[in-house]
Image 1 (spheres, each protein chain N blue to C red):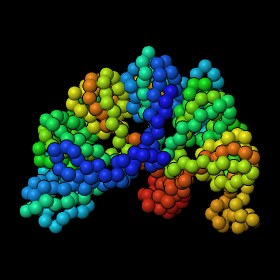
Image 2: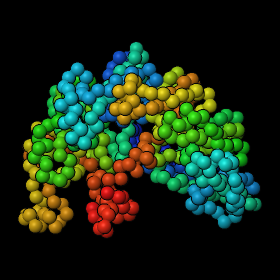
Image 3: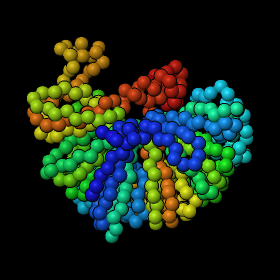
Image 4: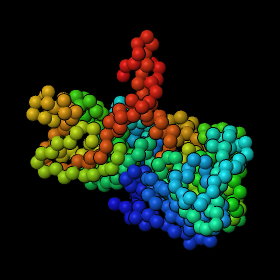
Length: 242
Length: 227
């Protein structure tokens, strides 16, 4: 059925960064990172699932006020392996996929809920997308900008697909997880006005240039809308009825 | 046209590679990403056929009323398709035959395939599940999706499938809606209710889970909405 799941079982880093493995891809991805002695890993608040006892946690405000506005938790926790290497297990909130990139003095933009963990060499900041790009995309006004040198992990709801863009590529706005800095993007309509209203695609993000885009196969919002009819209907005067 | 389905069965997505000037018809909303030079037109029917009546029928089937037609330019292009719910996808090739697909499971098809509603579905009004079926006729590749994993069952003789678990079946099969147990009371109490009894020779594709059952599991944990 799928050789992907098997080969993805344990991916060990060949990059200069920390040793890690990602298990359970793509449905229930779980990240285990080995933090070298006296080094520090930044992890999204509440994502830590397991860790060695000599790992010390500190809560830091990272990303500034922007992260508040983005709806993302304001806090990133720092985990330091005191005295010797330590292992930490990280489980992101939604069931889905995890990806790793090693940044060599590069910049990657993440959709605001995608951040999972990074090493200290990676600078995390929120970036205003501008009204047109943010507002019309119906998604978020902010992106997370990750720059510098080091490991970066991010997650999604649904599986991640990595696309090499060379030229022009269209992605449904909600499905964007991350993209590299070299890409120019604009939020546009697809097709004519008829397509805008009836295609079910509406506005899309059109990337241009050379770089990489990561997309997710599922959307939390779509799942939530699907669940809606299954809510009980509360009638006035009577208690509940289905 | 080349179709590759990835991340099966939980988070399936289909990558469709179109050769220059090839076309693909897909359910509205199924496209998640594509090459920038692919053209898109939205219609209420298969290109150059049918009309508004067919669109209304499709809407009644729980399918979106609109279909998107993707055209590759003079270069090769790719389109990624995915669905809303967690689940699987399947590629299938029709060779001048007819496949009946449960409303909602249709994702995409090659332009030579006629998309219509079969009136076989009329009988299933009594099944309590989806009322209509989408009927795909012709020759070419199709993509269908399911809630949960998808698995084929070769029928030769008779076979019983719960109506909510049917994804698609060959129209060489005849079917009747019947009770699961020996008596009506028995069937009702069993929670199986009505089932579909297939007769003949052909394939039935089933889904491992039933979206309506999953939804009902959630009901008690969800906040009520106002009427």
